[in-house]
Image (tube, rainbow over all chains, first blue to last red; front, side, top):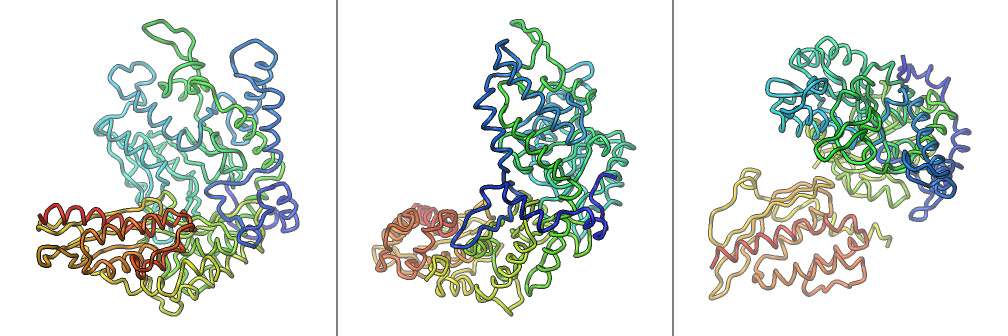
Amino acid sequence: MVMVSTSATAATQVALSDVEVLRIRNDFPVLDQEVNGRPLVYLDSGATSQNPRSVLEAEQEFYELRNAAVHRGAHHLAVQATDAFEDARATVAGFVGAAEDELVWTANATAGLNLLAYSFSNASVGTVRGDAARFALGPGDEVVVTEMEHHANLIPWQELCRRTGATLKFIPIDDDGALRLEEAARLITERTRILAFTHASNVLGTINPVAELVALARAAGALVVLDACQSVPHLPLDFKALDVDFAVFSGHKMLAPTGIGGVYGRRELLNAMPPFLTGGSMITTVTMEKAEYLPAPQRFEAGTQPISQAVALAAAANYLHETGMERVAGWEASLGQRLVTGLSAIDGIRVVGPAAGVERLGLAAFDVAGVHAHDVGQYLDSVGIAVRVGHHCAQPLHRRLGLTATTRASTYLYNTTEEVDLLLEAVAQVRPYFGVAGSGASK
Amino acid sequence: MSALDAMYQQLILEHAKSRSGADLTADEATSMPDQPGVGQCHQLNPVCGDEITLRLELEAAGSQSTVKGIHWHGDGCAISMASASILSELSEGASPDELGEMIGHFRELMRSRGRLEPDDEILGDAAALAGVAKYPARVKCAMLAWVAAEDALRQAVATGR
């Protein structure tokens, strides 16, 4: 099994320690600063993570020593750049359990999901023949997502269904933020062509049962798309072992710069899919009438790619690998439990998602009775604590929870237990500050 | 006084709770009024989900018209709710030109990043919102009701003639 252990004791045995985390923090220059006169407490890694020096140096070194366009030109730098770019692909592919030619670079997970949806959309246009026709959708076909999706794994499928006449359905969640698997079993039928779901929720922290959902999809003959944006950075995983058809992730959530991410796809699927973006670098033969396309991954990498970002992402994957993803996951699991236990004990705080003691990522989103999330975030910022406030790109989920906005604290391998405790202390001050302590009601 | 305390003054927190004019019902908020001299506008801040539907009614006062009242339905942070409440109180009895001037001055103040001093004579209690200008991310919260009022006023004046 590749997911983080559900047992707290098993997790702590392999987890990082506070001492190691303090050492890790030294690798992250941005964390060493004061905000509003207090040491910065960065608890917004679920939105974007910070970069260790090795990542920043990898990007700079590429520009200082190897910068050139890749996959063209025969000069020395072009060869160096191409090697660095493809070595980066091999490193990152290895990190997520993919073969090199099964990893396509994209700008981020959103771009990856759009690549898939638009490729399927292109397959649905009448003139497509041959292998690509297997991806065609039309009236009567169904795409199934979940109620906890980030907008990035919802809207591309809404639009694909709108363009093709297919129907979008969703698996509901229960009050603890878990997918209702009995509903999933009812919703996933032979009409289901695509099952797209998040590995781990960016709001609830829920880690979804991939194996059960994949089994339902396999039985129905549906393709599985995994949004691994919150799992690749935080959990040890292997896409092959998870047995999904496609998966997407973002570099900037896993210690790398913005502008780089990946799509994993099974080789035979990627090579049968129509391209999405077309142009240079993705073709074999071009005439004035038509073009033949390269196999994956180049098939989906039209135009000059984010080369230095790919190199930096590989440095990030190396950093995480050397630290040990089991240990990162174990540490964050303990921070997640400390968050949910501590927050739940504060008067007027409602944490959404799994209860204390139940498996969750190292994050917690919560409602503060009588105080809007924006005001909560402003108060926390005034004492140097950075959190995310709002709907976290998951409006339907918030509507299901009966909320318009929440405050989310999300940790990473560089956060200490002391930082979590500073957050808990500060959150306890919020309702008194806004003069709503004791009122209990949410308005 | 810290910058945070300057933004969340007692007056603001009280308005955020008492919410003057927040008596438009959800049903009224979803239907556009079809009456001369009445305007209505819905504003949403997609970043945080703050939302307001604001109805402005003019009444004849001699040859002139004045604001009879602003009523609204909304949900949001302390700043957006207090701002709507203050605006509702301030606008009552103002001529369309006076309200327009108020909105213009408030917008300038909010966009000033704290460089402008509020004119208490024009803005009354809304001057207490001056501290928001130092937080660019929150200016939209403070402006939400005022942007809605500007559009509702335009409609009310157009149909009132």
